[in-house]
Image (cartoon, rainbow, N blue to C red):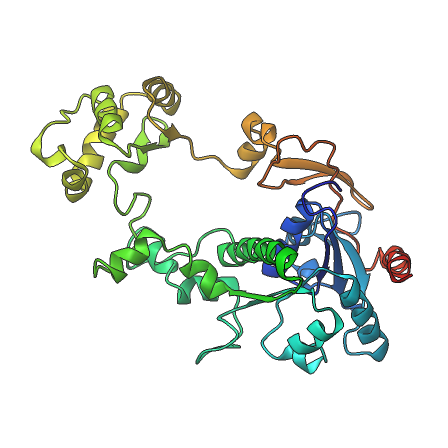
Length: 385
């Protein structure tokens, strides 16, 4: 692997999704990621499905999503031999990622103090459900629990009476993203101080950290936001609308865009109820009805073409097969091909970043359990010499 983190070694003690996603992002940037798994079954996400693929239908596509560009070694962290190996790896690593419940790593003999005794330059990323301290610190948490506790479900769904979870495991994924950029910052700081530090985030923090204008609606405005279906909480028109053969999305975020939409749909943009965004939002139900009356005259393809010509942001609502077959997706490097030891050539969702001038990057497939034990030991012995 080539990349801006090409000389960085990440020791990934995490499992499931949040920690592995953070490690995967660092691997996308070129870091060597050594994934430590229990010999008995490995990362629990290896058993999460369907779908399962492979000749024996025993390879989890869930696991494949979060573990590209990694090496896997099988280690029992409770054994003396396993602990000794982890100590050796810690000494040679730049980053350690863990998402155990608070206190578990301490009980295994790897407190923060011990880890920094072994390697003062080590950057440690710790991801928990609700934070490592506070009145509910150490409480276990999974993605959907955090979506509810952190308020996201109250903002999602057709109405305030029907809270929905976000379809993706967004708390886990955001925690991984936040963790990865925290690691990048700590590595930069280490260049000046020579010392590593601990970065902590949580599923609660991940969701609360993206409340954005929903958060300030309450903290500053005193208004509790609620679910509004497929329409924006502050801007109108901005959402999903029915046309002759289904639905499309239109986002008119300024007055110029609104006037173009109004002209296409034969609506008077200057009438009092639609004159400003505040007026349109107040009369949003009427606005949606008037727009859908005009949109009913033609199909989605017609309107997407007309809106595109007018410079109004608009789009289809694609299924995932359409997304991955879309040439625009592929042109952005968002699909990568890797060689899997069992499945052969497969395609995976690709990294969300591209670096100008960085060419020739070859991604590797998510590893089989323990497949890189010998290679990692050989690398470790060479580093220790």
